[in-house]
Image (cartoon, chains in turn yellow, brown):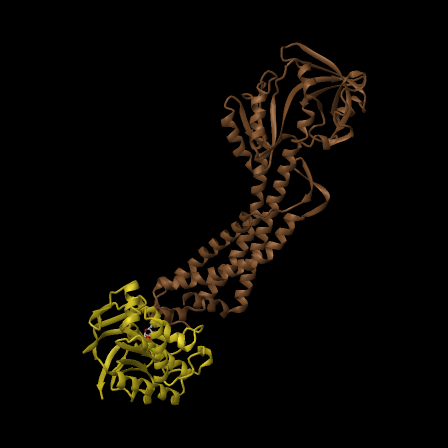
Length: 227
Length: 405
Ligand SMILES: Nc1ncnc2c1ncn2[C@@H]1O[C@H](COP(=O)(O)OP(=O)(O)OP(=O)(O)O)[C@@H](O)[C@H]1O
Ligand SMILES: [Mg+2]
């Protein structure tokens, strides 16, 4: 089943001489259960592309279909709710609400989805164990290491049962050992729950764990490599 | 949960929240206290003013109030007095007569205002008796040589060179157009050289009625109420019962005084508005800072599916919650002070002159309005102020917000 389908996606920034095409004519499809890395040099458009498919930014041209729904022209609350129910996000850093504990951060998104308290609590415990953070649920983000924070972010991203999890350089702020461990957790979730991941990275070791590599250069797909 | 997050966000920048909170509490404290003192001192002024002579409500015939003429008098006194006695909001009432006249002594002449008062009833309405400087209040029946007793204002006493038991002549015009004249004897001197009643001559009601040949009729009924705040409503009720007469609350009787006092009162609000502006600038600054520095966080919230309205709610809630906590603190510090001011107050070293009325005892006022009005205003404006940054934050493009650290 296709999770994402993009056709001729373009996004430009600026006007006149300073106009940059951050994403140019990008078309690709991603199947359920894929573990895809978007790679390319700095400024090649990775972040912009992830924002576009996550509905955080709207394309200037082209279409995005996510789980069968066209999102390019969704707006306002409809788009917010779509993100909440269908997409999980992991960013490079500062993913979590600092005033909530790890467990509350995970629980909160389920609350936004209207899931009842007992079920929320049960799931939080379950998921903390899955990402290897049993017993750390009560800690605020500031009391967790960078790697632990990113695991909480992964837990939060998957708990809402999204169709896809988008991660923009999730390991960029971690040392390579911790980064690898985080990727192993993600990979495990991908295998066990058939969760679809699309992440961007600079790191050679990390990109080698992907099953598919989309190479970006100057906003266009240079190479699409299945492994 | 939203409240929980809002609350924790307030605790996040403890120092900043504390400062803002304290400025809200302090602003409330000053606001409520000032309001209490303004109300207190004006009410005090009104009390002193109305109890001096005017009373709280007056009854006249026709337009006596604006065009006093000797013949515009009330004759059906029994009906009025029955009605006034029956109303338990009225503490006391007194009939009066007025007439301008000329007075002579061996030394000089002067224009005077004759005022006929009922010796017993007058003391239940005005402080005439307390204003006596020397002499006594229509003491024994009849003065020396069986002359009628008169109490004269200090100004007149000086001008005519009168002292207690001195005699003086008064010439006026009777209701029937005849010339009236008589000799009176000074039984008391009233007030100060500068006070409003300095050229008044107070006579027993009956004596003046005879002098003016106006039989048993009077020009005015003045009454004192249990609560001065009821003046307008009592006047309205009485007016219905006495359709052929004109009933006026003190605000109408002394319209000039009332209006200038109201204008004066309004002037005090300038200070309060300035005070509030200072507080609100502080609040705005805090909300703006806390919103700007959390731009990225809001981006994350939007990414995980926060609706923009929820974000507005969150920021709004943070401000309202902080304001409410500060207001509770504000009440805790303001209440004892206001209570002290309204119960005890303080004596000023020198009597203060406000609009020709002297008072020395400075007191506050404690009413629900004084506590809740500043609260409402602060809460309302704090909420309004938070809306601007909140909407700004909610309008942010999530992708842009995420790009900011
Ligand atoms: N909001 C923006 N306004 C203007 N230009 C932008 C904006 N966002 C991105 N760009 C430009 O678009 C191009 C692609 O940027 P993008 O952030 O997608 O690259 P990236 O591959 O994620 O880079 P990095 O590896 O450094 O994160 C860059 O040239 C960048 O300068
Ligand atoms: Mg990037």
